[in-house]
Image 1 (tube, rainbow, N blue to C red):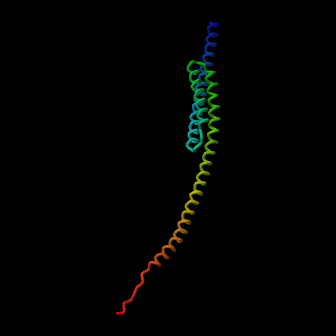
Image 2 (image 1 turned 90 degrees about the vertical axis):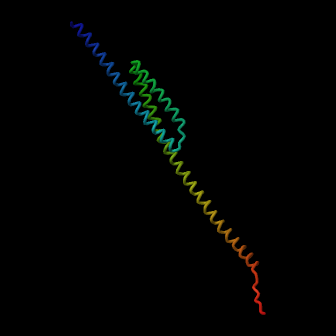
Image 3 (image 1 turned 60 degrees about the vertical axis):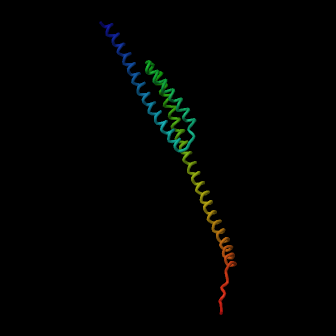
Length: 160
């Protein structure tokens, strides 16, 4: 009877360890999925800001591969491998997130600089167009008045 109780206790302990490993794996995979979603959203923001996100997308695909491997490991009962792979996803996603934040800031700054440059250039073009238009109008106005004055007909009063 005592032997049966000892065997049951070890079985229960190993069952609890497996259950704890499974719960840890579920928790870590869920955390990895959250990090992956957040990294994707930050990469999307960086792209909308005008940044070149091709390298970030490639690293995001790598993180997705790790995540897929973690889910497969979890499904096959390899909880330790699933936890390790999910940890890789978290690390990779965190680096991607930080790089995306920096890229977004740089892209926004570049956009502001481009806007200011275009504004200055456009203002210069408008001012020069107005100035040359005014100078041209004055020159041709004087020419037109002189020409018209040369065509003026003389009025002769008939004294008869």
